[in-house]
Length: 380
Image (cartoon, rainbow, N blue to C red; front, side, top):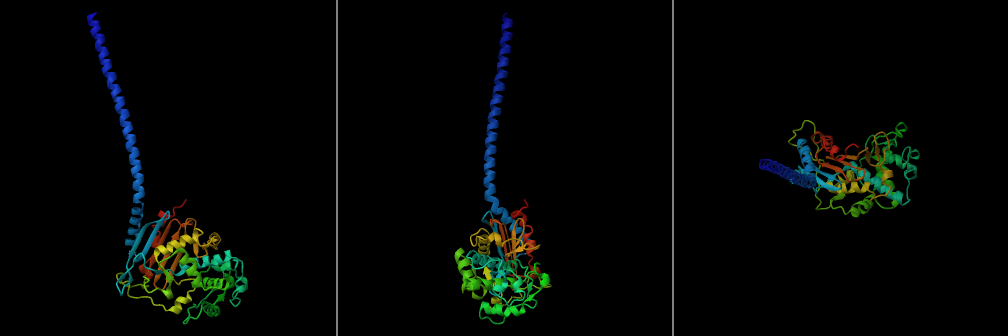
């Protein structure tokens, strides 16, 4: 009996030992799982914070890499979800004075101005002073084919009008006189009517119509409705730059030149030539001023009729000053030693702004925008 009791006691003690050990293991496992879960939650929270903190770093790294690879000269800005996440400034605004480009430097935006001209027109449409269905003959009957061309067709560059020999004027008295001088140089091709052909004369005429229906000059309206309304600090007309305005000089880079010497050929224009680009290429802007304007063109700040303005007008997707693509809207500027590009989402929240004061093969805007576009405008 004594032996039996000892055996039972031994088994009981052994069972208790293993039971206690199992309970300890279960408890330790539960504690481990709890700690692991807590650590995972902390890690997830940290990752989320890191992602938020590193977003500007990510875009800045991407912009730096693309700009350095392409030896980009000028300024650039990337906006993501309405916030500036990356900027770039390099090269000289004025090489002779060794004045560097900065984020406040103003560059000639050239044809990107057309979207702003279209918006000024839509403001007059809102006021009932003009309609896109109006014919050009109501305002400039002497233009060839004017009785067949609507204002909508001018906005879409499908009017059939062109100026084969240019339209630069050597003197300037007024915008209306400038247009009067341009009309004899303008040709209407019925075979090109309703077909897209990029011609500045379309927007020069629209700028003149804006003046006629508003009874105000184009520069006055631009100042009042865009510069003053948005409180822009680095925007001005080329022929009226303020004394302390930080403007870039444009430079022509010719094929065969040494890539290390992009500043040998400064572009020189006079006031009459600058006036000649009425509504189509007279404005200097900094990169951020340009973004603010482009965003305001699209979000209804400047015109509630923006959705009627920026629509495809032809197979080119051009309408109202933008190329209207599925995931973004684009505008380009080129001339007098400057290159510019805007790619912006339809809601204005994501954008790539590129401004350069060196033209020709030295700067390639496609090489700058193509690697960055998928980050800002992914295909749905």
